Image (tube, rainbow, N blue to C red; front, side, top):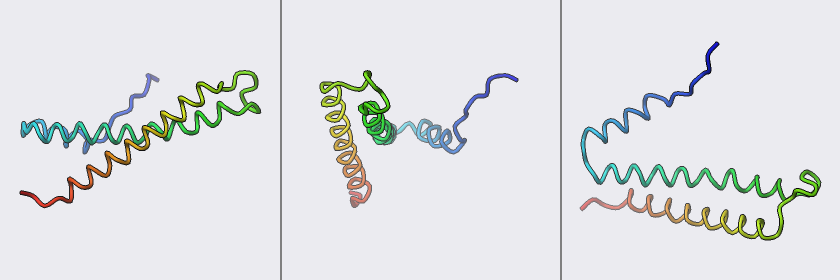
Length: 100
């Protein structure tokens, strides 16, 4: 049997196609911003457990993270999460703003 391929649901493609056909640059920019916020929100979900588990001597032994990697890793996680919260808040504020 050949390698299986993952295909995104058609509803995702249709939203992108509709925005592309309309040719509205602002909608395209908004779509890009939303996609980046969603992707950014997923990053800490991978980073927090990764840093936690790779810093445990019980599991990693002599290969556990050093202090510099831990400090920069946790700082990155916290900064990315804070930026996600701000971006999500800005997006929600814009969505509920009165038109005009």
